[in-house]
Image: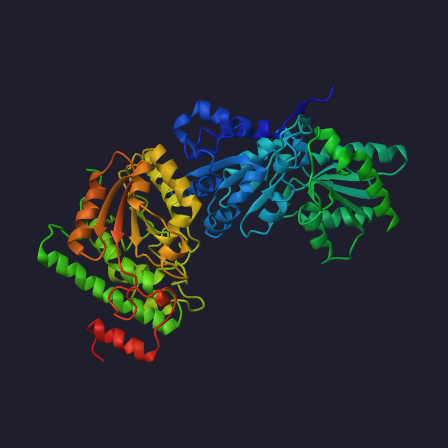
Amino acid sequence: MTKMEATRDGYGQALLELADNEKIVVLEADLGKSTKSLHFRKAHPERTVSCGIGEQNMVLVAAGMAASGYIPFASTFAIFTERAFEQMRNGVARPNLPVHLCGSHGGTHTGTDGSSAQSIEDLAIYRTLPNVTVIHPSDSVSTRVLTKQLASSPSPSYMRTARNKTPVLYDDVGEDVIQIGKGIELKNGSDVAIIACGVLVSEALKAADLLAEEGIHATVVDMHTIKPLDSKLIDAVSERCGSLVTAEDHSIIGGLGGAVAEHLSTTDGTPLERVGVNDRFGESGQAHEMLELMGLNAAHIVLAAKKSISRK
Amino acid sequence: MKGHPCPQTVVGGTMTTADELREVARKCRVHIVDMVYRAQAGHPGGSLSEIDLLTALYKTQLNVRPSEPKWEDRDRFILSKGHASPGMYAILAEMGFISVDDLESYRVLGGICQGHVDMKWCPGVDFSAGSLGMGLSFGMGTAIAARLDGSNRQTYVMLGDGEIQEGSVWEAAMASAHHELGNLNVILDRNRIQNDDFCETQMRMFDIPAKWKAFGWNVMEIDGHSMESIVEGLEFLAQSNDGPSILIAQTVKGKGISYMEDNPSFHGAAPNDEQYAQAMKELGVSA
């Protein structure tokens, strides 16, 4: 039986594990129960700042604390971080202050709350900011490991976590395999490379199994860091496979698919098919229903892989 | 008392001391007009309205070290109305954080005096401002950090009156009172003019002191061009430690240059040659 956990739980666990460092502080905007920062609050209320339902203020309070030597982790829903985008741009990224913003409940996978809560543009917008690292981990273990690594980064970051449970992929893997800025090859095939992030990494693995049944051998990469993009790994899998697919629970515009396409435009132009939300909004539905409706699940990744191979 | 002992000047409200402050402010006004005239761009009006306040704050209250601008336990000053940068650069030069020659780099490529104050470029600047409505939130963060550090250091934030039309200012006002930040102090430059016109025509703000009181702040109104009144106000900030406090300073936009005073045209416009000569004359600078 596959172990299932939500990436937001890995985030909450990481904050607790980081707490020995007295410079770690947590900021909340009335969603600590959801983002999972509540565990830190319970253990360290004196280092947890409630900002009420005020995300713009929260991001800049974090900036002020970062400028005073603290390491702030501020979290709310991915969609609500977006209303503080300019604060993140002007007050955090521009002065390069190490504020770590976490948006939970990202993507259509977040489910039945519907389109108002399903951020499908967060990775794209934060990726445009100089100095900002953008991360979207695939499972609870990598979320915990990457969050802990962020604490020693001198620069700001945006991390998206997911509301719903997904398979744990790194239970038996040494933590040194998981490094900010380094994609992880989970399968090593030579016909097509599927580069995925977040909740679609496990769908990509399922797609690889389906393809294998047809004699097609796929590489699967967990590209948890969207920025800086691991372009060396993209070059390596492009050369080996000759065709690429990106897969993300995010708009096909500007996210992982956009980042890979931008990189390929500077190289030989390996065929690329992008699996993502096709420039539309979501609706209420269960996570698996949303992945089907939006064309993001394993079956759709298989189709995209075949199309990409056909373009070689 | 929550304030630091005054590092620079003993303030007793004596005429001599107030006169000294007025002389520093006069020199700062000369710098402001020089900078904006040289750059043929910038924001003289709000710099001239704030400069008496900045002068008294830096010279009588702010515990800072010009030779060690990043000293960790310094008081923080955040110019949230970051476009009024000539005023801040002028007082930073008079304090010795930067040189008077540095003022020539205002709005010049590669210059430390960026168009809007920037902590990455200029010594003594604690926040990269320029987008209105952000400084109070940042100041709330530095105030919480000071409290966590067990430090007595203070945070001062200067807001413009037009600026408080930004909704995020009120998020910060509410949150700062909730957290009972007695080490957070705001000075509101109530010059009654914003970019397009008088505030009254752009967005009426009704009873500003009542608004801050209702948000849980200690409030005092002062004359922002009377050094005696300003010093008294700064003492009020120093002694109010049960929560955040604000001085609402009644000021005149463009104060000190007759044709700029109370004139919305000089929110963001530079004087021409003739106007520059007149300004220098009014500021007591011989040709």
